[in-house]
Length: 233
Image 1 (cartoon, rainbow, N blue to C red):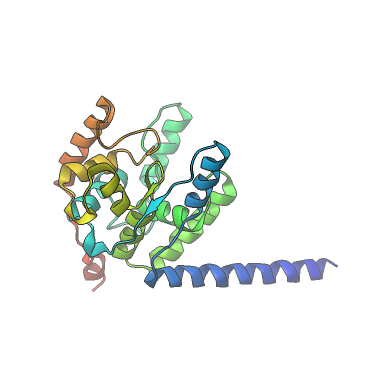
Image 2: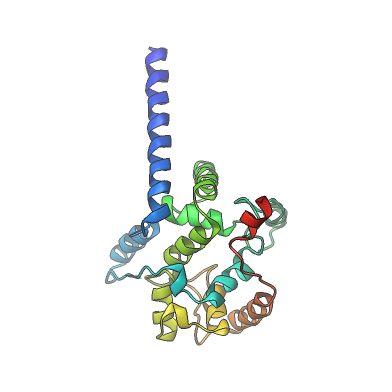
């Protein structure tokens, strides 16, 4: 009996690994059409008696302003181009501050956020965190940094029913993602910790201060997706 259970669990594990690797390889080349969060938000809107609405338009990395790419690195993950998926110093800092009851920027990297948004559900359970680490390692292994950035900027929530930078640029600034200025890009990046609460335009004093800080930090971001490959050579 135990052998049958073990055999079943082992087969289940192999199927999970095979399907997860297949899905990561697929999205290395194919645009991500929908994320679990988009579905969850739609059901939440329906449960609240609201009209279900969602804006999501995929664009290639070449159609996304360099300012936007620099803005999310400056605000969310300043070691994105050099780490292997995890920033352990930031994670430790977040853990220590959380123990003291302080609120600071979380320790999740852009790679971790991409893995969570594309393949998983929202939550803080150890199971989801473990799966997040697994998918983070997969995308770091099978995708380039440029592809991770492309998927990230096309998938994350950037407003109420607004997903991806093209929809966000149209929603907040009535323009395409490729035409975002540095300050506009900083405005979108500034609300990412809570895009349902904050606004990129007509912002609060707190968000305006974040915009200014992000713009200053963007000056130090050297956007070179080939840097890691050059180092390996």
